[in-house]
Image (cartoon, rainbow, N blue to C red; front, side):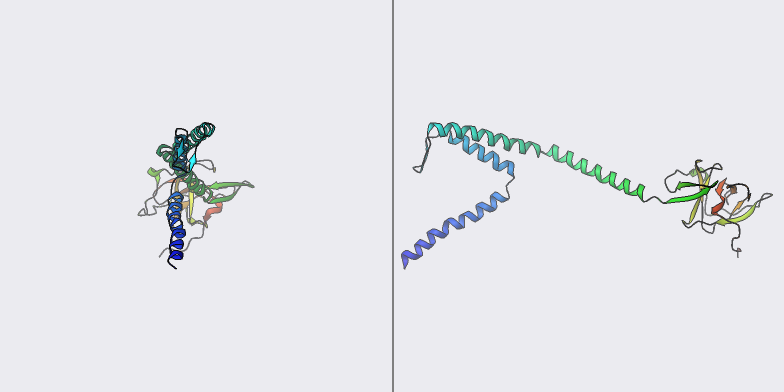
Length: 220
């Protein structure tokens, strides 16, 4: 009975040693494993035997050194490719890619407004053009007295705001923006697509006629 127990203990002992070795190898970088293995093979080329178990012939020594040098060089290559400088470069490239992706998403998300101008469809991209901050409206501005020919109006735009441009064309820069229920003056002209407007802060420009509501609600 004792001999059986001793036999079981002897057979279990190597198994218990294998588990931590496997775990250590699994968590070790591949470059480190290759370097250690390469050094081991190189060292085999300079010994006659390993204990009384393994005897190494001259031919085996030669091949052991060659294999060891090859494995060692592979490990060094892997190690250098994963150096901190390389990792930093990869991180910078990843960050640049993410920034570019965000910028692309923002451009794709820009709202596009189609306006019929002179019988042809013209596309106005809102939110991307610079606005002259010097001419930007202050919400505290009060609507001044009208000039001859001017009438009060508000915008008719599902976006909640409309651009006021520096000229009677979509290619002119944006001077300011008029928002929902913000009164302004306009000079209607049934023969023109772009009408002269004047905002509450006396910013003058042009707005497409399709965005003008000439029947605003009465002010309280």
